[in-house]
Length: 543
Image (tube, rainbow, N blue to C red; front, side, top):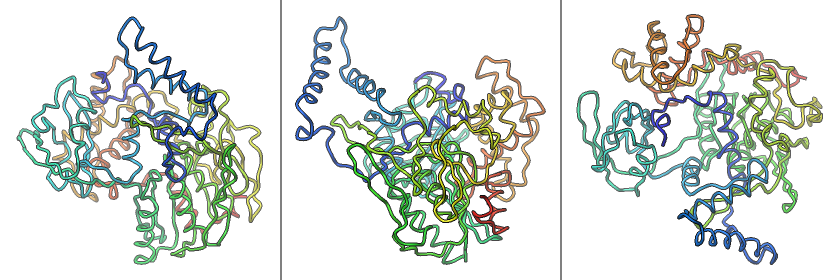
């Protein structure tokens, strides 16, 4: 790992571009269908000439392996060959290495064997940045800001320390006891942690009591997302008299299709309503319909989306919009309407292959054009430059087609993503280049600040919300930036008020459990959603 990566300085990719890259990358639309158990290649299914081509690749690798002037890594050559093949296909058909496959599966399967910590590597030292709730780490007494010195006697400090080294040392079978040595402030601490199942939550919620509304945030659609969603709905609708729901799908890159359709069945009451259909060259048209088995009476529905809402997120937003079931608020979504299936490889890696396109109930394919791959990958940058993120009428999508919703016959846009009923502009401060550049430093700076001053920061969340970040923080931020990158960038007083809010928000997320950390005081999306519910506005108001 390169030095700048080890220091976790976030110098290269701007924060909003980072979000877009995540949406484009490994998790987008991940395993849209039920998990296929097929081997990658079955000789019964392919013609002889295809098998001969497979043999040619292997023959070439073996020839290079035997004759090349220097020793080669055949696994790397095979991986490079596979990547080359997929570059000729669509942007979402990809080869995943064994490490990438394991990492993605951990996120999507709902649990993994580990201890349940997140960390930064700062100043050549691994710092615990989060301890997951009910995890083995929490039970053993590990705390945020602890410095990990060694794991089972193996040092994990120094400039050559990599995140992968730490992960591999902690990736043990459930029940394995791991001895860890820490520095907690100036105090040495030794703990034995028993590796166990760590639950990866995808759903969090808050109850807005004054409007009897549950705000449900779904990070991605993993194996347990529907169950988590139903746990939240049952809690608030049966025990707290909730009536309405705000479904927050911002920055949600997609996931398992059945989890999304099951959630739609709880929102769309009627039976046999088309939720979406898929169709491909080798896949016949497959329709997904509502079951009519809704367990709780959900009244008003609002869906929040942005430029990083993709795939399964767009399926939900599109179905709700097409059936005039709720108001979609935010910015045009990512525009990913391709369906992938994932196939295991013998080396532990996987191939994720696009097998079909999906269409919303009104017949919309919201997939963006990817003939020009550079243009496709630079979509966020183009939207930013063109003003698409700041102005409702600056869309880059031309001739995407017009469709009508199925009940109220409202006009909705075709390809290029789901266009919301109510537009929320990105804050104009993002137009400031200095703000964008500085924003990339905030995750590490906020963590450093919290670690340094946590003894003087209120521990109770209500007291924290009244706490004001001292203005001397601007000097510390500028010193931190100067120490980490060669730049003339200086945060001026005109931008400091915005950074104070963002740094405080990030510190809040560090110090408190995720379900307690959300602060919607300055969230324009949520504010607009609350107005819609308070004023009892329906989709008919957004024709």
